[in-house]
Length: 547
Image (cartoon, rainbow, N blue to C red):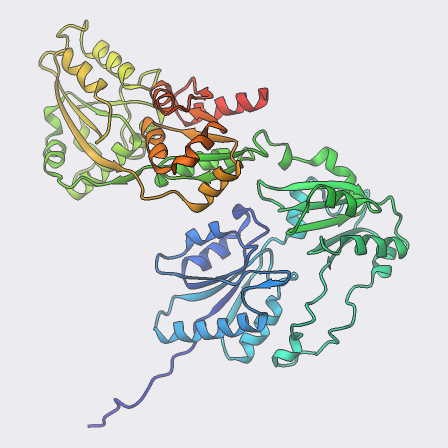
């Protein structure tokens, strides 16, 4: 029998995906990009790649930041090239056939993104790679600023230009040893401004803020009229986007006066005139507002999406974590015997979701509610019930426990005094739920089984970026969706930052939450008339429009 134990099997490297992350707005990433991230074992990402995209990655994915900015490189380009090869080889040896390395680059990998250099290096090293294009800032930035890069009546040409000459300390592509690469003279200028000036059309300059005075003067010297419209767009497609418009002869001075820094792109051409009519992004009702959302991590996304779609810059500060009860004995007994109850009452979407998870563990489904009345405190709870195939029979017009109690009593009885005698109610709620609903039903004669089907707890800390934004005074509004979000934020903030909350406007979902805010010395600036997320958004829009 042959002993093959000494033979080492060399496995092929993992595939490297050169992925365009888009210009900044995470919503502009392509489906192909997110699919690559979903199977990534390692993501090597740039400064201009929105880190929000990392949420698509598997839990065990390794993240390596290699952001490069002028005169501040975490790794040289040669170092990044070698890192890609090393990671591809090491991941390949771990026999994770479906896993890959993702090189996540802002914009498009092949538009001033050095993706071509990286692809050459990978090919020479024998590492397989794929390229996933991304939306480049030169197209998306002008679109978000209301500037079409082409227009039938103005121009049919657009030219993308780098406004940043290669760092003379780095080797050109040919010096890396890439097969077939042509070594260029690193001292030779790469941009013929006279030719660009004569070409006309729309010119889009990337990475040119520092060199903008020189760019403008050379274009004018090359024959471009000094009055040509120009625009500089800072942090294009993000809620922090700012746009400065001026004549070519004055654009550098105006951008400097406005404090425009990198990242930014510059647009030169007659199409800039259309911004006044087509500027949609910066005209959104909440554009320029930085809003802090204090909610559970699981629930924050809905409110965040609603605010972001209206132009807001949203920071999330989870102040509540949802956990399972330590003991399911009482919960399981109630869910197995739902037929014993006249009505099942849910006071939150979290309660519905927790009940559904436990029903499935018990081998049950929505049929367990057959013949039972179901009550929901508000639209979000009603919607959560609908998601599991249940239509709520009762929902008050005002979404608080007292109003739900009044509706139930009116529905099941003829008055408040002992009107619910003999009726059995099951309340499935949070461990910190207010007792008002339970007490009102019991006072009316009901037999109430009150079960904490999920627990809430305060997270250990707040995100560092939230603390920094509060300290810097960069937050306009803070949203509070429950009394516990107010209580927990107060406890989680360092004492010196509690006063910073007073400098922000505070949006409350309803009166109970407003009471908690007032108790902490943070009276609500605005209280939603409709006590749910859509009501909060409407209240915020009304308040901002009046400001």
